[in-house]
Image 1 (cartoon, rainbow, N blue to C red):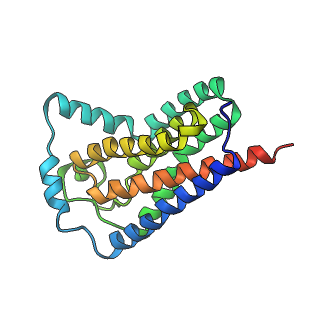
Image 2 (tube, rainbow, N blue to C red; image 1 turned 45 degrees about the vertical axis):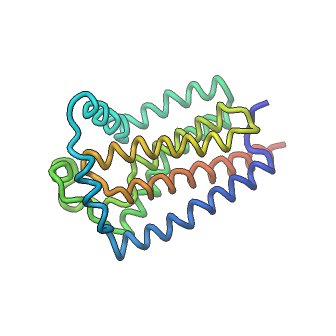
Length: 212
């Protein structure tokens, strides 16, 4: 039966959270005091601008990741999760967009400037912060949760982590390609999104097991 995290799974989820939070904190400190890296402008120039059909796809990924659309998408997925797995799955899905609040708080603390591109001037203006990418945080958190909910328990953590990597890569590339984030912003978002998934899955498991 597929249900919330069992005790053994909760231990592995805590290990996953610690294994992603620690490098995220170190990366955030680096982003605050010593960024961007010398190689990041080169990567930015190499992947942008993106045109043609592929460019349209990149633009669509960015649009879907915008917070209002993402919340609507999450709501639809939550309805499906309730039908498939019940209340615990709905809570997990519903908590995933809240990862954006943590990302926003980190942005305020780190105060890393976005790349100086036309896209940033158009979308954000001069006073918007970059680290971590909220789009990537949300994408990784939700996709990892979906894999966790749908996969068989013996392999669901591994599939959730693989899904997190794929979601972080796709959304991270899309954000860098349009010039609104540095590559390490995307990496930070992937780490934070994975940590958010692991922590919330562990907490939901604890709460569910504690019920009489």
